Image 1 (tube, helix red, strand yellow):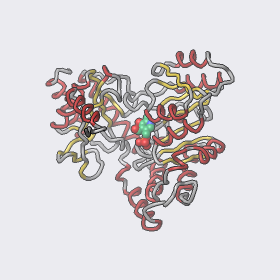
Image 2: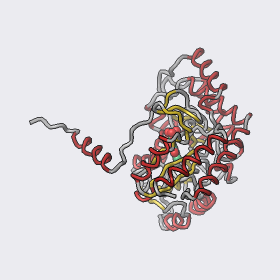
Image 3: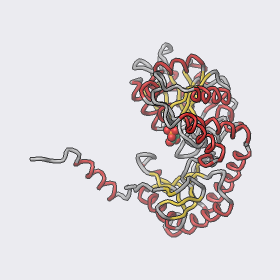
Image 4: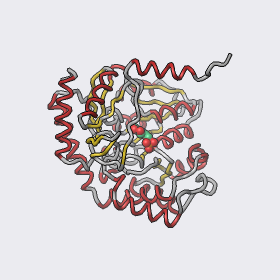
Amino acid sequence: MWSDPLGFLSTELESLKQQGLYRKLRVLEGEQKPKSTFDHRQVVNLSSNNYLGLTTHPLLRERALEATRALGVGSGSVRSIAGTMDIHMELERRLAAFKQTEAVVVFQSGFAANAGTVAAVLSKDDVVISDELNHASIIDGCRLSRAAIKVFPHKDAAAARTIVSQLPAAQRKLLITDGVFSMDGDLGALPALCDIAEEFGCIMMVDDAHASGVFGRNGRGTIDHFGMYGRVDIQVGTLSKAIGALGGYVAGSRALIDFLYHRARPFLFSTSHPPAVAAACIAAVDVLEQEPQIIDRLWENTRFFKAGLQALGFNTGLSESPITPVIVGDGALAMKLSDRLFQEGVFAQGIAFPTVARNKARVRTIVTAGHARDELQFALDVFANVGKELGIL
Ligand SMILES: Cc1ncc(COP(=O)(O)O)c(C=O)c1O
């Protein structure tokens, strides 16, 4: 008798629906803007990672179009065969100069950069010491590497030190943290972790996906913000968030980058960016260098909105960045809050287990440089009304 071998998937989905955790994809009609239309409704958009508004910046758009006209729509190959174009090398040179490292390799996404790098650098005899809230792409890279994984409580450098100090001196160790944590918006314990890495000879790695274009001079990231130049061996950045296009990169020594050219599987086995993406990313570096006032606007909006949520009495955790969570605890309540905000004209995504711990469900807000004050004030007013209606305030 025939039975559907994938039948268990429908059972799982039904269970998500019953728990109020089933998510329908919201569809953006038009451009990614501070005020956008999703699912036929105009909303103040507090859900994008488009921190600086570069997804629609005229210079990036123009350079992407020029590159498409001059070079076509695709690269035609993986980087290690025939898919390395001049423009890919130019982007890597520009990013290396920007990050003040010897070299940079660009990957198809930040996810590929993290997972591909950790899996390439470590093998089964090694150990990785990782913050419990590190991004999924780091966790997947650790699993792929087959190294032993030791997790320390969030930002607890003393606990990380205890773990490291008990490992054999000769064992290769990677100490790894997010620069900015994507669900809480707080910063990794960088200075203390760098001290531990130096004391015990660990490789130090930072995932600066949400810090790229946001923290440090001209958006150079947390290494610049904390003055950690020369102390972080592997820096990952993304080109998909503040940079406005798509991709990820690793910045470090020439030897690290050459090694990744030979061993990182997403680099070796997946086609490189279309020229338009590389051109847009180069233009974004120009914008970061020439228009740092955009980053100032991002921070002014961040301070205004975060203070507004806190004044209303919401639990915003320990955020230090433009990512501000509104933590409500229960997963179904977080989804209900997100739905009601959306009906009233504010898009802030609900996030529940397994993305965050079961009792820490939330809606996540992200302001951008382009939000007008009256849009942010409108969002705060809606948060106040809906928060009271649902008994959160
Ligand atoms: C902390 C962190 N690292 C890496 C990534 C992956 O970046 P990308 O979207 O470029 O794949 C993300 C994106 O969700 C992230 O939040």
